[in-house]
Image (cartoon, rainbow, N blue to C red; front, side):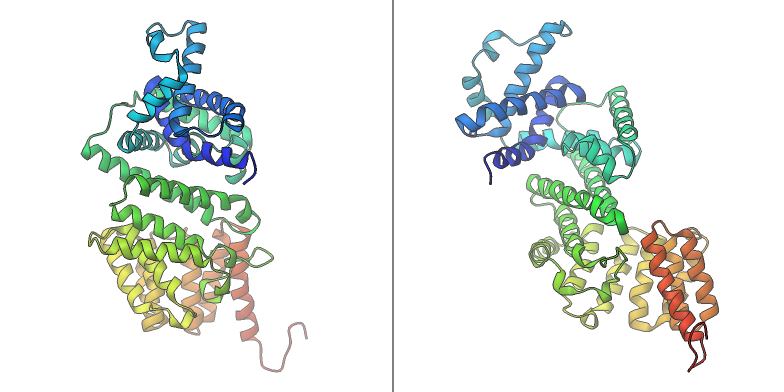
Length: 423
């Protein structure tokens, strides 16, 4: 690392603990964030000369707290202040604080911080934006670029989220066992949403939004360190790792989507796959399966197949069946139909998705899958209608281009042998 790279890495790693503790102390998101930023500025001046402190998070908490208290004192906005003895000697205070801040203390602060970001009163887009700004420390410009909106619009979104959190009077006490369980599920869902925002990008936006996947993985790993015995957090982390391992093979040079069976598997990230497989194997040994574990198990079966024809589609079909029971959803059934078609043929897949039509009438992937089944069955006119509808519903130019490939194939197949287009 360069002289400043290790500092940047330490600040990024310590951010959730430090901001969480400062938030607990000041009970205001803006104050906590500003206090952390001021502490970071002092770290950039102090650490290159003095070296890193024994506990960077504790150092940042104490420095940020002291700077904020001084600012509040000057502005006379807070009457009750700690005794001068408690904040007069930074070195002594740092040692004392480092002794008091054990792992469980950090865990509660970080969980509280993440939970505040995914407050149920906030729309999902605001939850994600707030988490990326407060917990991850991404700039408003970075977040706006990832979400393909203007910087002003993203600033407004984050400001509204902060205001709503402030108006909600979110409690700051340590969460109890039941609350912790509820909050953990909410936080996991938020991390999953952040990842999906990046993973669902395609074409020109894929490279721009890829950092969202990486940030979601970082947050999942952080959550796993805090809750090392939770199999669903293992499953979530494994799922993200296994999905992201295919990132370099998912698009061609022009940004067009490459389906799983057509991907160059030598481009898959073997280190991420190994980490993900180890995690899902460990999670399954707990025998407390949940939706993230099942999805990770499906991704693991794809990752373990050296060639498309080696994929265990029978087991994937069974796993999707289990996921249907845990999380009934027409989208889950649609995915299961793809697996079923690999085992029992396209007619079986088509029979499974036909009842889904009313609920997925505006869903791009439904018509793409339906068109593929019809094309395999030789029902080309119906397939063409389904593909036309899919193009109309495409979210990106890459999705539309992928469907047009099927239409081009239908066009070629429909031409009499020996004739060429345009002749």
